[in-house]
Image (cartoon, rainbow, N blue to C red; front, side, top):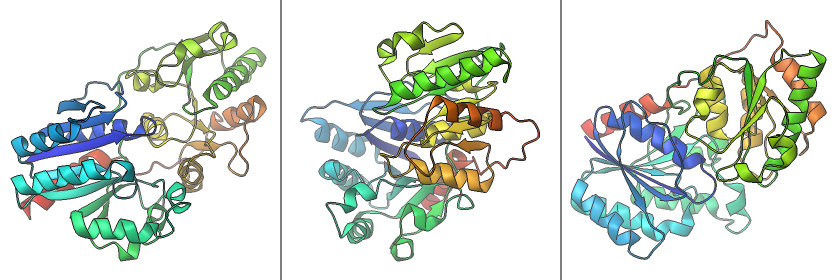
Amino acid sequence: MRALCYVHSVHGVGHAVRMHTIAAELATRHETLLVEAGVSVPRPRLAGEPRRMHLPASTPRVDRLVASAAALRPDVVLIEHYPFSKWEIESEIEALIGASRAARSDVRVVCSLRDIPPRARHLEQTPDYDERVIDRLQRSFDGVLVHADPKVIEPSRAFPATDRVPVPTRHTGIVVAPAMPPATTAPHAVASAQGPDAGRFLSDAVDAVTTLCTTGAVPALTLHVFAPLGAADREPAAVRETPGVVVHDFTAEYGAFLAGSVFSISRGGYNTVAESLRAGVPAVVAPRWDTDDERPRAAALEAFGADVVVIGADEPAFDSRAMRDAIVTATTPGRAVRTPDLTGASTTREILESLVRE
């Protein structure tokens, strides 16, 4: 099977992380091309690595994309999020689909959708959002893969018009890369954040953890702080110079520090939460309110019984005191927790293989 995976990181880094994980799983058995546009995101090297092409922010990018599809003649094309979002690059994506169908008439074109798409921000300007999505699915796609566990998040949370989707829709489970060997065996915790208030969030996390360690509420440990992509040198001096705190830039080694950690503190992004669940690490999560997905995802995981303690589920606020209370709760021995389906990458591969066989 020949697979072409396309992702464009218009906002943030999560889409690129998830699609790389899927493409790497496909590459363990199949010829796979991962086309990445937008931000270049550091990723660990996985067991299978796809051939990668990064599209420049210049005019010939569509020509390169079309030429790549013509040369590969893919059996399956997996496209991140469009048509549920990414409408600003619609012409580029439709050109890829057209070139793939011209190269191979029986190619399967599939939408790769996270658990909760960014629907609300489009509704303000596009009252007929559902109709536009359904029209594009009908016109250009052969299926939708929702990378979620339906026992955690109801299908209608991903798309309220689920019963009207004109192509087959399958849930894959949560997509997450394989566990990494621990970066350190010394007692440690991790804190990470993206978004405009990341600096304040990480400062409060440092304050909460150092206070708990000082009072003996948690054992002495090192806190590894992971700043947003390219922003480690902009963290406040109070964070960088706190004893027992190590500041890292966004890194492909995040999962190695997460492995074996006592707990994690983060926002509610798809990949960060998934990695905490895979590592079996108690997760303190303060979801961002300026996104469509983080708050409902965190609430659904906590209600399911995952190893997640949520801060600020009812109001857009967090502080070091709330973090201290949540850390104590998360690290209390004997908490009963459930693990959702984390087989999203391998299940995606199996579904695509089945589509091509059919």
